[in-house]
Image (cartoon, rainbow, N blue to C red; front, top):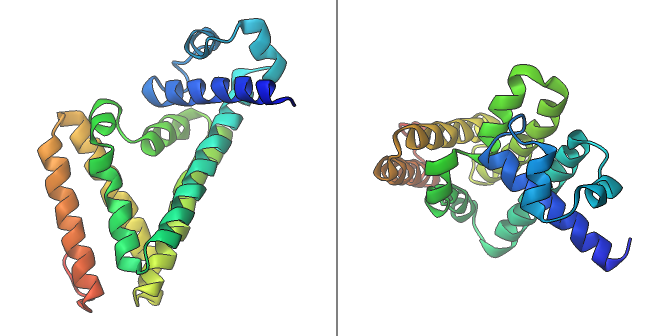
Amino acid sequence: MSRKSERTRQRIVEAANRLFYHKGYHNTSFTDVVNASGVPRGNIYYYFKSKGEIFHAAMAYRLGRIEQMLQSWTERYPTPLERLKRFLDLLPDSADALLQYGCPMGTINAELAKNDPTLHAEAREMFLRFEDWLTDQFAELGYAGRAREFARRLLARGQGISMVAHVYGDRRFLMRETKLLHHWLEQLASGEDQAEF
């Protein structure tokens, strides 16, 4: 594939990815992708024969970005506490989008879990990548026996914060709850394994 073709394909994938987040998978039509990408319908069919194929490419794009982000955090931050805090900072960093659309991982998984088990299994991979990475951080922090439990708990709390902030349009709630999670992590790092959460 030529560079021009790669750029065109990438433009389609990125446009579809935004639409799946903003409108949902089922509410996004092929015409929406045509309009958002600026790529003629016939050209899109050259790369993708169906909306399902576009979804697969969009999920691969998201997973690739997640993996790059997690790798960069691992390399940039020397301690697991710093890495875990960086994960939490996704909430305030993404506040505008979260308030308007909810969590990009949570919304697509909630939608697909209801009636598209095959596509849902693919979307769930985003959670699994974060869960594995968070598990490694909690294990390195000294909680190997409870690392996966803590990882899922942190994911669940983050999803809950995102959902409530989105429903109520409440930025202050999002910031306050994120701060409380920072405090919990600091307690864990100081050896308070019975820290309230």
